[in-house]
Image (cartoon, rainbow over all chains, first blue to last red; front, side):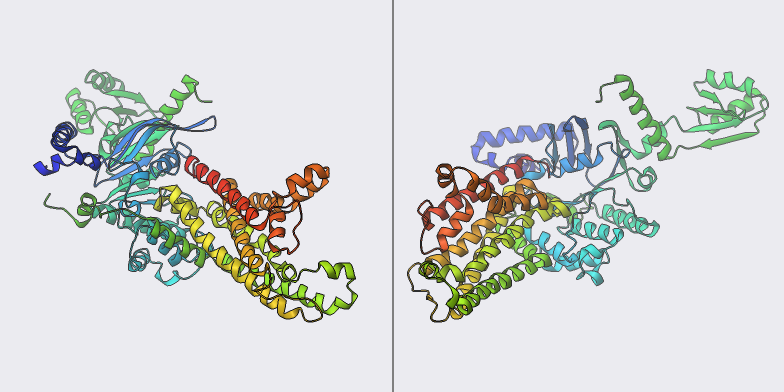
Length: 348
Length: 275
């Protein structure tokens, strides 16, 4: 996958090329090291030790995570957990107090063609109400030498061609969102950052955004999408980064997150439940009794529970797997973070 | 990498070079052109400034017989015809503030900075585009006001031509004056970021500060008042200079220093602050 020439090329600091043979050798060694330790896939977005305070308030607290290329990464957290702040820092809009955020190994500030490398839709609207959609896109396109024809292309993609000449101030929330997405696609970038793309949209709008994002992901683009709606992410994301109160709670593949959750359990109902519980616990399951007399068994598949009950001669009246929804996993994860912070008593 | 799509190729082989100031300038021209409020303001500015100059000149002509000898002796036809430009400085100020404060109030600044993360480049483009626009508008307003005013100042009222002493200086200087005030306003708008507050600061600079300084003992006020934009504007268009004021050339340099300082602070803060 890595050709020798690639290894000799320094992706991070092309200026070092002029150092002659020694420079090449050094670069070669550095890239070889990267290659062997990092796998071939270098993270597209990398956030390291990020802290951002607004006055006394800590919005993001020593946050580190990375986003893999070519997948959809969901960025989850309750409202006010620091998602938007993190995205603003990645986009170079806010300066972090400490830490770094890079895209393709460089800070956003240093990108050669920002709109061709990264497309973003930030939470708040960023459109002058008196300017037409077409003019808004055109003035953005010009900064990055994007052809005028591309403006009409993206208007077409988001279905705003017919109203492109109207002032954006007359747009509905959904239309404004479409215009924001159109702007993010102007430079046909490989990396897309969307902050709450479905926030405030109706069912039709949500479906439209979801289909569009899935399509963009299928084209091999890297998507980093924030949401406080966990169910949205369950349908789209390959990976998830969960934060609470500005701190990382977990960073994992979506499947793994669902499986590892304590909320996945098997509901068991039986007239001889008291005899069954010790048997299940002896085999490593955790059990808890529900108010209605049934028992929730976690850490064991429903098949194993059924087999053990059969062997013990216990009749089962109910054996129902209950897979955690992302919503529940999320509640569970963020609850812990809230408790942790409460006990620590450090937040001001 | 057999499944390499176009997108992936793009990520690996980025376009040569990087975005340039030229593109950002083109973008700023589009912004200025496509904001209806801006174009309206420029239009209203031109019409009102020229109209007021014309009105003043025709009133002077029609009432000349009632004007006393002392007043006749100090009558300055050049200044009379450029009266409307004084009005224009407020419209220019509002526009200068809006060029950047409107980006903050509408949130466009985030889209702008996402496209142009090197913020100084964005400010420089705004300075170039708005500065050029106000210079052109300022010179046109001054020139048109002058010609219409002189045409309406009929005998026996004294009138001037562009070749009269000080006339060219007054007309050209007045356009420059408007342009520099516009840039000061742009700086204030960028520093303060709120339209109303920045406009208040600008108006205070032009109207309130002179009142405060006039209330000071004349020993002090004579030294201070020459630094006021209003005094500088007065010395540019006046045939008879106030002995305490700067000469028009020095006045314009002082005004340019104000603009540089305001824009310098604006640039520093733009780079430092969160958007």
